[in-house]
Image (cartoon, rainbow, N blue to C red; front, side, top):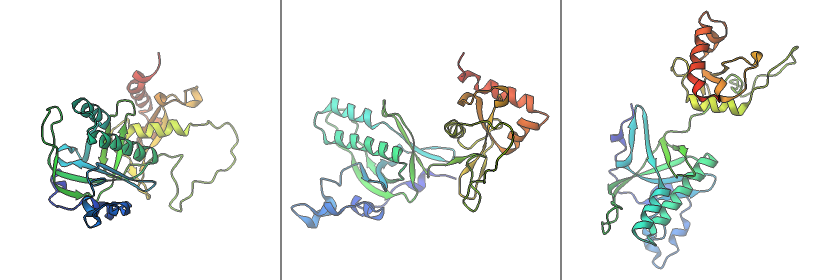
Length: 282
């Protein structure tokens, strides 16, 4: 079970050394008047985020801001809002630049699907709401060996959530590959075939987050580590049901079969229609 205590930093490693471990280019750190002090280069060592294009994003996050929900360890952030608050307190504060760079790093990680490595900080944080308070002080740092990912990012408000663990990939019966790495071969069929939107299926799978939208139980993990559910049109396409998100549910294998041929298929359909009716246009 996830435990926040396991992430509490007790080491005094430098940012330079931790960045080197994850493959971030730190060669420019030595370009200073006293190159022997490169590990404390003020141009870099106090930054909150680091981006290695097309490779990795490194974020410095505070241990005290971590949250635990079930097995999920996460942190809610809003660097856009923080930059605005810092600007109200003191114009030209270098922390404003660091907050904006952090927000850009989140955007890059989200858009390019880059892994996030977290440097977890321990120490005292500044209360920016009070003028004249001492700046944050880092006493300990540790590099989390587990990859993080951006779960959500609102470009307009700046609100974001990062989660410990790699981003889950969801697949259904139309996208899963065989153990040999091939999609099932197609063969010509007589009669009509209904086209299904890959985008809509993907949105339904993401919404379900790996759990059957009828019974709530998780789907199963495939040989590639993806999470498998089956997408199902609540009002069948053969009955002129729309190929829209509000009419597509992600179901476990058992309840998908039951939704088609089970004795409870009417009850299952009614329950799904009720669940998603609030999202349907009037």
